[in-house]
Length: 610
Ligand SMILES: [Zn+2]
Image (cartoon, rainbow, N blue to C red; front, side):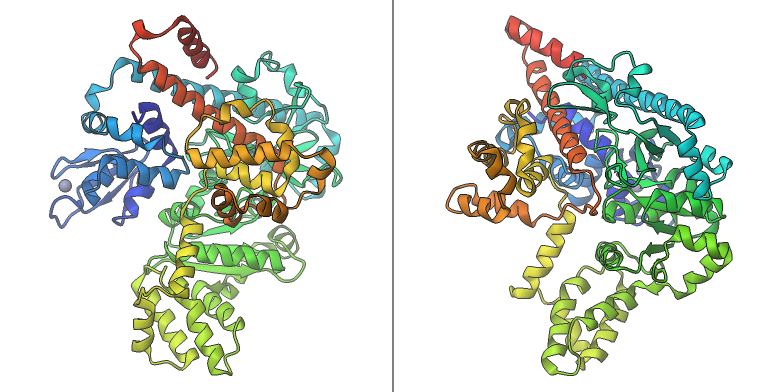
């Protein structure tokens, strides 16, 4: 059956406000969101969405429920389809389909009336919440420890001073320091060396297990920036080196069940008031930029966390304010990042909302600029920010030769998939008008071209863009992708492989298994030099070809300076956690008297390791 724990994890991962807003526009009202009810006819809004409790309620017609109920009611789709739809958005692979269907009716009726959740499930839900709570408590203790360490770290303090940070601002952002020691956290956490399966520090990404089984701190000799969720709880850390030789410049916590990077923005929790008051939000690239800008009085500022801008980011920000200004470096990487943010924004931009792109003068970043020129000069740059529509048209026309008719035709070709993503009617009209002028095509004709969904090269590419953007990538696919990029990681899989092999979705796991055993057949020298093309060639005639090729086309949305190792280990622990929960559900659904002694012990172990 589709387990209650799966449903619960799914509901934890998504935000009901995001889900409902995909169908109807919501307005912030106090701590809730309101709208005219989609289920009955009304002129004044009585439909309310409670974000902290994750449910909706209509005071007019009495309809209420969670995100799954909303999709079923609103779109008229089945329970399974609703769950699947949300699972895709949350990046969670669905449990095996044949199993789900059998249990569909039971689960669906159960969900509608929340009253029938049986004890077993209540216990499990409670356990999950308890684990989450223990995880945030632990991160809070670690943050306190890091802050304390900063007081004695002269090198770190002088670094912060040299970057112009005041003591107040460091305190406000709860900045800390991770000492240059292998196992400094073992001083405050007595359970540091617990077994892998029950080690909360490991689950939280605070420590790493080395090949010889010994644990060590993830963050060493780094300035530590706590990352908060929307409730203001610490869910992870960012660490910046003070010695440029000390590994990647920025290192984040890996993805954990608390910390899902594609959804989180650094400083959003603290910046909310400033965003509301200034009626805009500035999105920058690093924590240091956020901290320095805040110190100089620009407090409506957030940063992405080592990922490209995602739909979830844009939706979150557009709910807070009508204007987003992205600030990127003027170099190639910055331009690329801007283009990705633009593509992602197209589908979410509504008329009346404004998105623009600020490219700083060569060699400057927000940090250096504001320090030299101050708040006013920085804010006056906003007037020079390029509106989304200008950036779109400008970039597309620069890719073709508008002097020739072939070039003008090409402009329409490359614009089509992007224009089709735009949902705001006025913006769409403006874009089409400008494209029609540039391409020398009558506006009406152009509108028709853009509306046509004929099967041609174009709709293909639009589909591709869509699928790249909208489908969150499952942890299994990410794992394959990392292994293809760097086969040496296969060594890290040794002790974890057994748990991966029974997992869903089957095709993906089979491909992963085949890839791993292929790598293991290579010598370590061959492994060093194994190229991705060679690997794909090797599998080209096999049943795994499609799965592997598909994976190589995925965009992970990672910036260049990610810590691949941390990502890899984070993925493994996420997958294991998912599987632990699935296995627990299977066992828990067996009547107690049918459980063998071994299964009882296993269940006990699984429960303890959470
Ligand atoms: Zn209603």
